[in-house]
Structures are given as C-alpha cells and as structure tokens.
Length: 400
Image (cartoon, rainbow, N blue to C red; front, side, top):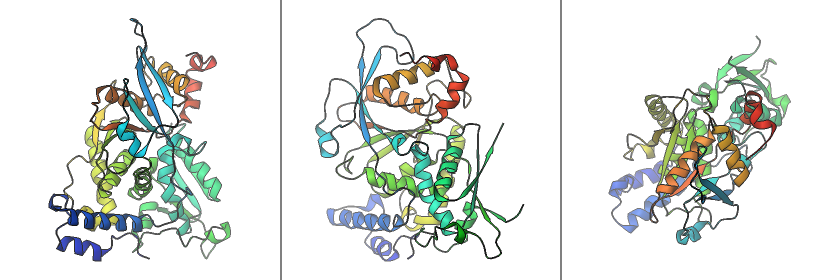
C-alpha cells in the first residue's frame, strides 16, 4: 500500500472543484468535500505500525491564582498554582468560565518513565521504520545527560536493537536514516517488519547501523507529532472547532513545526507559539523551512503545495530571560520546585519551565473569547537528575 502520497484521485477532484485552497472554500458543500479529502489523506498517512500502541495522553488543567500578600519573591512572585487532573474537555470546555486564569497541560511526560514527551512522539514512527529496513544498530548523539540519547537507548533495548550514543564534552554498513527513507519509493510503514534479532542481519552477517540526528530532528519524525495532533482533535478531548494556542519549548524545533503542520493539514484553528532555547530566530526559521520541504517529499507534496503557507507556520518567541543554552538562572530551580509541590507536574529549568512561564503569562492575558492556552509537556524530566548533581543544595532538602 502506498502511504506516503496523498490519494491523487481525491486531490485532483478537489483541485477541479476548487476546494483545495482554503481561500477557495466558498460554500458548505465545498467545505465538506475538503474535509473528507483531509480525513481520508491523513488516515492513509497514519496507517502504519507505531512504537506506541496508542497515542493517548492525559490533559490536565492548571489554575493560576494570586496570593493575598504584598510581598513578591521568586520567578512567579505571588502566584499560586492548582491542578485539576479531571477537567471538563470537549464541548464542555466551551462553557468553562472561572475567576482565575487557567491553561491546560498535555501530560506527555507521563507516557513512559524514561521515554516520554516529544522524544516518545518522534521515536513513535522512527523505530518501526528502522526495523522495517532491517537495521540492527542505532547511532545518535547529544549533550551530556541528553534526554534524547537516553530515550533512544531505552527504546532500542526494549526492541532488541543495539544503541550507540555519542555524547559531546568497523565492520558493517553505516547509513543515515534520511538516506534509507530516500531510497524507498514508498515510505516504509513498519507493517512488514521482522521483529526477531536473527532477521536483522544482512545476508553476509554484517550489521546495519542507522544514524538518527540529534534530537531526532528528521522530517519523518513529524508523522508521530501529527498522530498526536489528530488524537487531541477528537471531539471528547479538545475538538476541532475551538481555537487553541499551543505553547511548546523548542530544542531542535521539530515538535513545534510538526504540531503546527498537523493543525494545518487537519484544518484546525490552532496556533503554535514556541519558545526558542537552542538557536536563533533565523536558525529556527531555516529549520521550519527544511522540515516542511522534506515532509513534502516524504508525505504530502500534493496537498501542502496548494495551501497558502504563511512565512511563519510557527510563532517563534524568545524566552523571557534569554541566556546561553543550558544555563540555569537564579531562582529557576526553586520555581520548578514550586510547580512540582503545588501541582505534581515536574518541569525542568532548561526546557519545560520556559514553556510553563509563557503559558502562565498568556493565560493571564487571555480574554474570555480568546484562544485557550495549552502547554505541551515535552518531557525531559530525566535531566533533573543531572541538575541534582550540579545544584545539590536545592535537592538535598525539597523545601517549597
């Protein structure tokens, strides 16, 4: 089954009737036809074997309230947080009103003890493809205490693959994952994968080593993010009608681009605001352009080319207190402890605290009729173990 091209009969019909461009949807019949084309195309795109048995995740609600005090200390000052682990979702969210600002958190940090957040979503599609290509070894790189490399190591161990991790600070063939994918007429779906170790060797007994980019920043990883977007758009979760502003912290920027792309091709009124943490604005815009270009080659050239893509699919913003990547500013670990103590949500000062800070600020600025704020928790909580070694005084006694 050809899974990487959108069904040309549907695309041609949509072009003929002038409904493929959003600006040309002039009546309800055209809109319905476009919706059917979208649903059919995305369903075929996502019809493959995945690492995660299902894309389910939890959505929690965070209420932001003010302490009754004139003193102000710490990053969040006199702000208190509380959590609702069973909030009203779906259509019930439309009637949700409260005196205090609130935002939602997609708890992808709960997917797996070690392989969670956007790491799980990217590897969701990558590992079955590697297995389908009879890969035996996976090489990737990252910084010291990298959550990405840890996720690759654990995932490979669970699936019987050998992982090799190159942390910064000769037999067999070596290939890049992108080169494997480009060699196929159809993107491997993982449905034909031989899952036993014996079947992973080549005919002459050598091993096949596959290299995955740092942070799994390959365009094919966008498939896993789009799968998550489709799950969240179900009527009993976030639905397809209400506008949302998704806040995502950016390392490579792949997750933010994938989320915005998923919302675009599913016709959702969602926007993505991403906090730049590891690169410049120009760097992230180049990454966005590259990922979309590669995605067109792998999956959706016919459809995306007929949308009027804005220059910025993602709204890239600076962190409130910019710094060199990896630096932790005064008060940030205490802020992480405050969030954990008051809500039970673990955040780290390098990645997810940046998203939490922005979600708080946007929720306080949000009007009753404005887009609801949703923070996508990208995981990375394993990094707290490394921070505990660097900042022992903060972790020896967990005071709020």
